[in-house]
Image (cartoon, rainbow, N blue to C red; front, top):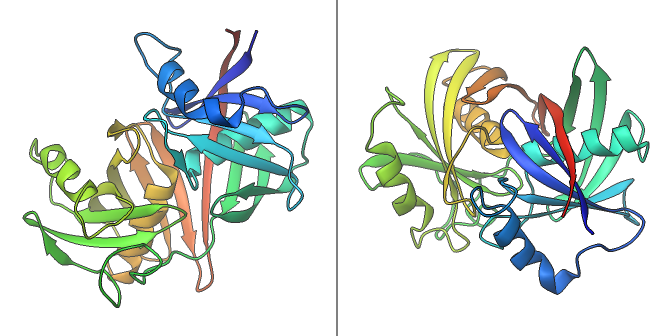
Length: 270
């Protein structure tokens, strides 16, 4: 039997497998496990599988596998879900560090009816070498597939496109073209952004590895806030509205902080 817990961060939902004390799914089986159980008709249904393990660099370690079986470097909503689970199990305290493939990230949490978690996401990387994207310099407002596309790495690569309307049906016809454009050697997530004011934006995200729109994307929200600020469209603290809920992104010269809730949905056995 395999025990699991389902959690979500703003509707971005994940299956957590607890490997804190022992390996549950062998590494060579993790991709196939994700492909099978992330399915919403023949599986449990999720935007990814989170593995919680021990770490020699931090308090806990997070690994995330997408529904297509690929392993991602980081996931903003996912890390909040993993932290919520670890807090409930007593593995960590309110302030802790989490090892990811994108580096060690510090977190803090508070209870206010729900569990609110703030993650120090690190500095958004704008250079093409760090995104990664072909060419040199920063990737800002580059003409692609009929849109002005900017790109940044916030743990994973993100393309950011500012639009007047988020209801345009052509947006998600264009998203896969940008996602698979050869200028991005590792592919990219694709975000469409409407600027509501200097301190509020609304975002829709097409996620790499999910290959569809998700209700929310944490790293995508950070990416959109970072690019909007870089282009002078918003201030350094921004409320990000997504279909699944709200996040607050705070930017400094050195890093970006993401604050949002995470909720337990149910426990199960397969």
